[in-house]
Image (cartoon, rainbow, N blue to C red; front, side, top):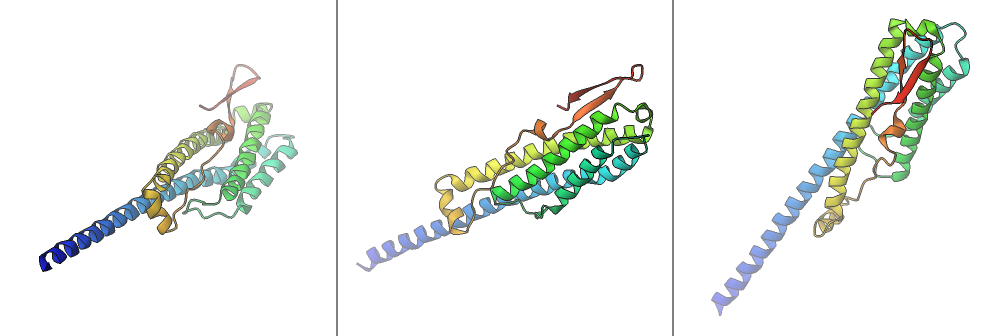
Length: 212
């Protein structure tokens, strides 16, 4: 009788230990995936900040062109200021879809303003030979490509995390510790990317094509 009780007791202890190990393992996995999303979010923030840092010099350089359209400069300055008004943690991915949407919309408005500025700039011959402007343009285009890459990586990390926290039985562990799905970037990368302005120095016109 005592032997039977001991066996049953041992089996219960073993089951409890296995359950604890499973919960700990599941928790660690969810934490790792969540941190991966946060790391990619920080990368997204870094490349967006790099773009914002380029804008003052770009505006200053372009404004040196004779009779450059002031409305375009005002638009891009206001768009950059609007981005700064969206308060969002640069090191922790948002959990509120509305907050991410607000961030995305403000960055999209800045992208549109930059697109118009580059297109307008093609009308000013002095900018086509301005090395400062051409260097800033190249940096901006490189940054836009980087933004597209990092947004894609963020969505991939978010997808891996969301799959884990919504799949049984991991959903039980995630629910126990308050981990819930995180929102994605919804717009396509091309919606965030201004056109590349390609100057033809033998021609006064310029062509534009989207960055791929």
